[in-house]
Image (cartoon, rainbow, N blue to C red):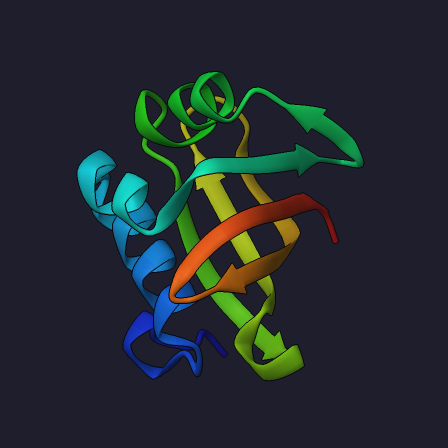
Length: 107
């Protein structure tokens, strides 16, 4: 059963998922620290390049299935126009209401 973004426990992660699903780059960037980093399947990636390719230009969307670790860990069905749908795990490092790092990969 999908968890509505509005029901996610952590407000910062909730804003991240909401921005991804809306394709709202400005809202997405506003939830990240200026020096935020990310990894995909265990490899660090260029955040701007990755998010443009995997989220914004390919209409990425997260349908959250579970959350844990106080809302800082999600399992979601991630769908985009490039890869279709895949089960993904997401972990977020949140400081003072901003995400400083997120890690994603196949779940």
